[in-house]
Length: 172
Ligand code: FES
Image 1: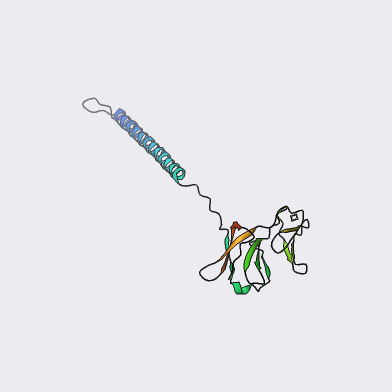
Image 2 (image 1 turned 30 degrees about the vertical axis):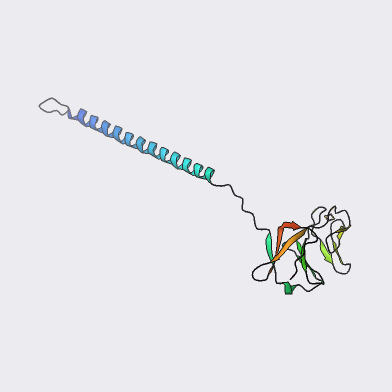
């Protein structure tokens, strides 16, 4: 053992200092850990609050689509837009209307049969006339007709989200 004139023991002093240093570093570590936990909890609650306050909006694709220029459709033509599942009908008189191509029975896509002048469903044999009226079942209802308009560029626009009566036509 090493000692001085006052009788202090250096080994005991250094052990005490070492212990204090260990305690200090442990305390420092626990403080850092606690601060980190509080920080994470704060950020988490802020994020959850922001999510709660932001509007819960479901963005769905528009039901409107452009169908090109009127001159692309000859008078008396029936054109199936397969992607949109809509028939663009142009009457002999030149006016337009749009019919859903989705069969009102069980939802198959109907086709235009030019040789018979009807719209026919390949699934269970329903038939519709050019106005979408049921000619032959089992379809329970006519094909819905959709709103049509011209945009600023003179293109036809069909709105599948806007059904209209059978007397609604688009004159161009
Ligand atoms: S789905 Fe068209 S007739 Fe059945």
